[in-house]
Image 1 (cartoon, rainbow, N blue to C red):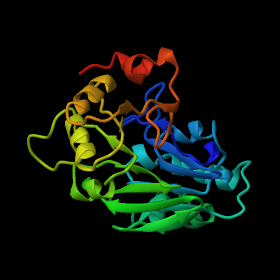
Image 2 (cartoon, rainbow, N blue to C red; image 1 turned 90 degrees about the horizontal axis):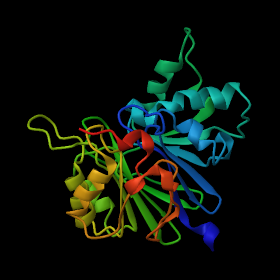
Image 3 (cartoon, rainbow, N blue to C red; image 1 turned 30 degrees about the vertical axis):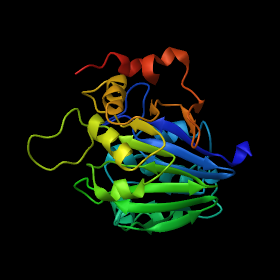
Amino acid sequence: MAGDLLRLTVLGCATPYASVDNPCSGYLVTSGGTRLWVDAGSGTLAQLQRHVRLDELDAIWISHLHADHSADLLTAYYAALFADIELAAPIPLYGPPGIADRLAHFLTNTSTRSPVESAFAVHELWDGHQAGVGALTLTSRAVDHGIPAFAVRIEAEGRSLVYSGDTAPCANLTQLADGCDALLCEAESAQAPAEGEWVHHTPEDTGDTASASRAGRLIVTHVGRFLIPHQAVARASARFNGPIDYAAPGTTFSIGQTAPACPAPPEAGEGHLPDGLRDFAP
């Protein structure tokens, strides 16, 4: 049934700060009645509410604790405990080790620690962590980003979506994505670093990872400020022969199908490029 499809809605994908029309990293993954908020970058809570209230979420999954992937957990905490939201129970929150104390550090304003666990039922990730969230099965693998960071494979009804989080190309990501229906992969770096630690994909790396993992489809996301999305897609396509899309804010993809279920509006520009990013050139 259509309602049981695995769907990905892009709330935002900007890095390292939100644009006028593009929040930071955040996605809504749904299957049947299950709703999972994946990454909570700045501005994504507002966009999430176009689709679901906080008290309707089944869980939240956070790839790593950089602000452009997690900052809206702070405002979600206030919404969950001190506003018009009434939680039946704390929202399950899957994230890197130390996530609860990290949130409490920012939220505590007196000598009494803020009750983070009253809003979120925290589950710390580890390499190979597995969890069931409603109709979804989540498998997380540690990836290479210079801090504790994870990618996730989300499966439902025989369909599979893999999200890279932020990472350099690495074996764990390739293995996690093996044979997936769709790979949502970052392409933050315009070029590989001349020296120092490698912590992101270039567009070519994104295409290579999709090819090596035999992904059915590549969705390029988290495109850096020194790239234009359609350029990133073109560069990735030189290394991957399958269908490729850009994760334009507001777009919904049906995983296991080759076309977005709800494409971005035509005025969003060539290659699903939002107006606010169209003229952003190196």
